[in-house]
Structure formats: structure tokens, C-alpha cells
Image (cartoon, rainbow, N blue to C red; front, top):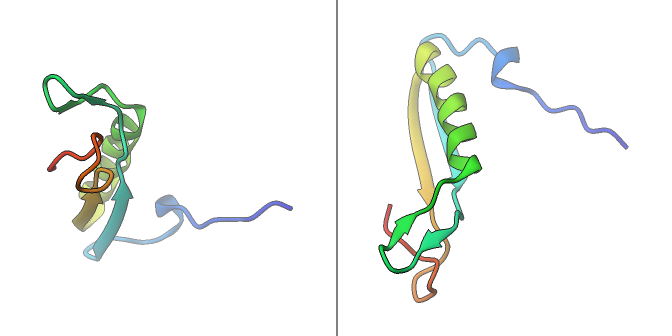
Length: 74
């Protein structure tokens, strides 16, 4: 079964506010406590660039859960 999703390209966002919730959950370099290169972040950056051109954007994001090795303050 194919599900059709609405894309930001399908909606007129000019002058609108967009709330975007993102699960980063990328690999972490535990020695440096830094996020490693992440395809998710690169794709997110492309999408955000499109939103910024059309509207105001508010981003909510998190990286894993506190207490686990993969947690890192963004």
C-alpha cells in the first residue's frame, strides 16, 4: 500500500511559521563527545534551507536519551 505524503514543495509556506520536530539520533564520537558526520543532518540541512527561503522555522530536536552513551546536548 502506497501512502501519499504532502511535501513542503506542495504547500504555500510564504510568510508562515513552521514547527519542525527532528530526531537526530546520529552516531557519537564518545572520546570527543561530538556528533559524527551524519546523513540525517545533511538531509535536514537541505530541507531547512528550503523552509528558510519561504517562512520562519522553529526546530525541536533531540539526540537519544539522558544517561545513555549516545546522549549529547545539542
